[in-house]
Amino acid sequence: MSDYSSFALSLDGPIARLTLNRPDKRNTMTPAFWRELPEAVMALSDAGETRVLILDAEGPVFSAGMDISVFTNPDALKTDGPAAREAFMTAATALQDAFTAFERARFPVIAAVQGPCVGGAVDMITACDLRYGTPDAWMRIEETNIAMFADVGTLQRLPGLIPEGVARELAYTGETLSPERAEKLGLYNGVLADPESLRAHVDAVAEKIASKAPLTISGVKRSFLYARDHTIADSLEHAMTLQASLWSTDDIMEAITARGEKREGNFAALKPVKRMGQG
Image 1: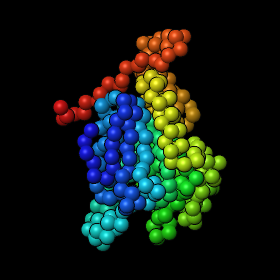
Image 2 (image 1 turned 120 degrees about the vertical axis):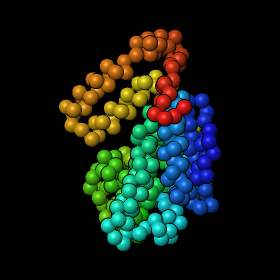
Image 3 (image 1 turned 180 degrees about the vertical axis):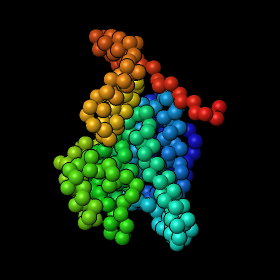
Image 4 (image 1 turned 90 degrees about the vertical axis):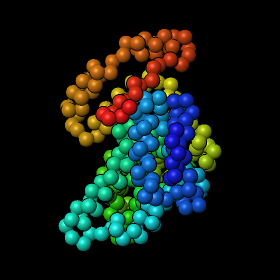
């Protein structure tokens, strides 16, 4: 895999791991991070070999959100006139797209949150499919506390993951959400005793997902995302069209045979995506 300056990316068969590896900087998100993250995620998705991506971090803090260097760059924050504001808006949209890459990926993304998750990090994990934490993995919508509002996905995704009233409470007050409450609300799929237990549990979940037919998992993810933003009637019609498109007799027969033989199924990887203009 390519080298990235803001995180480490590794592969273990069909399971990829993206690790925030700047613990001395509390894994804050530098300008390079916003460019590298979608590039890395979509490269994995297009290649077709990855079946699950685990998002984790080194050190006691999962991520403190946006790096201060972003706010101290005067050129990046200019809004003194309509043209500057239009450029600001366009640049901010690119930040949103960075985390939307998790949703566009053809595989599920699991966030393993081993410590505090603040500001932009909340935007990031709400774009993941599953989230697990440790007893010190509290969260906070920090933007409210520094006189701005979260604009990279938290306010759009969080109300679909927990009761809207609770999401509003957290966004209006800037108060901390404890991991215990996050688990009760369903935001965390589980809270594990320590980082070692978290890693072992997330690895086991990832292995279980990776053992399923990739076409099936891709279809499940597409259906969930479509249903989130559409009516039930529209989503049912979409599901039937998608099922007809992805129906694989080979995968179904292999799954049935593997179950009868008490073994894991042997499924083909997704086809690589060839984008226009690429080799």
